[in-house]
Length: 116
Length: 111
Picture 1 (tube, rainbow over the protein chains, first blue to last red):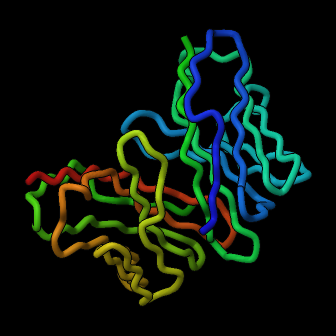
Picture 2 (picture 1 turned 180 degrees about the vertical axis):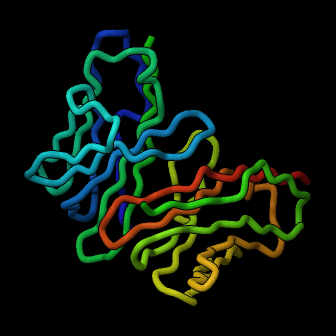
């Protein structure tokens, strides 16, 4: 089956620093990947749609300069949280759309970010 | 815009009880419908899906039928186990777009 990995699985950083989260589709190519954010005991909220070779599309209310997304290849998208603050602490989850399969999205295991 | 509404939790059941988690949706097109499960501290796992009206998705004893006339996709299981305790998310997606999730329903099963 299709596998999506995320790295790191958890990270603790200090306020003001930047953190990069990687999302990889291990056995398929993904032109489109999605980044979600999940607060404790809440649902997933779409942050942005990442398209290989082009700029990401951000949802309303998501700061594009704070959450930098790069989709440099068909198997890798990265989310960089810049100048992190405690309110950025959350569970970040990516998903990848499998080429040739309508609505076949595969989720990564998530990255728990804690900003101190 | 498209949206998903699912029943509020938590749902607390005894082992071997019947489970129903209601999910209704609004969509402008013809979405695919999904149920995802999230175990504590883990990411989302696809439980089942249906891509068109009257399709029934099933997996691990769970079932859901895509009802276009009632815009519903209720999740059912005839006999729950303690290991089914998790958060369940109903979701929809128009072709190739991001998933839109319901708020999630926490299921707690006791022995």
